[in-house]
Structures are given as C-alpha cells and as structure tokens.
Length: 235
Image 1 (cartoon, rainbow, N blue to C red):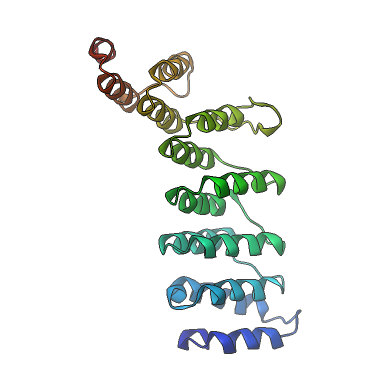
Image 2 (image 1 turned 90 degrees about the vertical axis):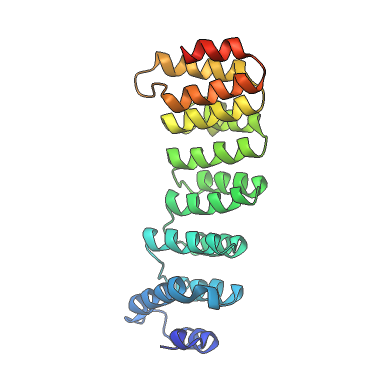
C-alpha cells in the first residue's frame, strides 16, 4: 500500500488515474481513511486534505463515525485548520455530515478561543440543515463562557429553546448545559441571572438542580463576598 510506505504523492497520482466510476473506489476510499487515522500525523497538512478531496471528488466519503474520528484526531494533534478544511471539503463535495463531526471541530475551535469560526460553523450547520444536538449547544455555551462572552452564551441558550427569532432550533437543554451556564454567570459576577436559571430548573420536571448546580452558585456567592446568601443555598 502506497500510503503505508508514506508515498502520498504516488497515492494521489493513482487516485487521479482511477476512473470516476471504478467499482474499487469505495474500498480504496476506506483504506485511505483508515491510513489517515493510523498515520495521519506523518502526512503533511496538504496531503491529508488532498487525500480526502481526491476520494470525495469521486463520490466516496468517510461515514459519520469515521469522519468524526478523523476530525477529532486532527484537533487532538492541534491541526485545527486541517480539520476545518477536511470537514468543509466533505461538505462542499456533497458528503453527509452530521452533528458529531461538527461538534468535534467546535471543540477544537473552542480550545483555541476561535469564537469567530465557531459562529461561522454554527451558521453553516443551519444553512446546510445539519441539525445541532444538545452537545453542540453545550460546547458553544461552555467556550463562550470561558471566553467571557456571557451574553452570546445566553443568546445561544435562548435560541436553542425556540426563543430569539429566526435562529431558533428547539433543542431541549440538559442539566449539564444549565450547570455550565450557571457556572459561567457566577464567574462573571452575574449571580442574579444564575439564580433565575436555578428557579427555572426548579419549576421544570426534566432538569432538576443537582449538587453541581448548588456548588456553582455557592462558589459564586462566596467569591462575591455574599456569604449569607451562600449559606442559604447550602441549607
């Protein structure tokens, strides 16, 4: 196998020479994706994107699981730009892309505090009818809060629940997402907003506050010097 011996240029040449409707293409594509997972770090950035593109131009794409694995691996190797280009190559060429693959890239972008491209990817998901999951919104809220962009985190939170105009998507938040936002609000000194979310959790039936919820609030009030309020929550 050419890729196994590191001969990426020769492999790209072979792919160029293969007829577009060659019956062996799906199997060849499968080998390409496996090698990218095994030895992708030894390939140049251009070679990784080139291999995915060459195979995709012939209508062969990784399945959702393999694409997510590849994007996650690239992000783990700190090749966020390559992961971005791989995912967008698949999208551009008509491959099926699902939320988990986008979530993997959003996580990588979030670790780099690249809020601009996180918003771009979310907008593209909506444009391409890639339905975001509660995990998608959890990643966004988490990294927006870490970047100190609390108002944007609140906008995402409202939008996912069918509030906030045309951007709404109607995805039910889970207790982890509530806790993430409460923690972010407390760290930003917005304890009143955090308490409003606590009351909302209490009134609902699905996302009841748990020990993590109260720990976030107690920590926030203690750091704000409001020990009495922290003690009330502790009781």
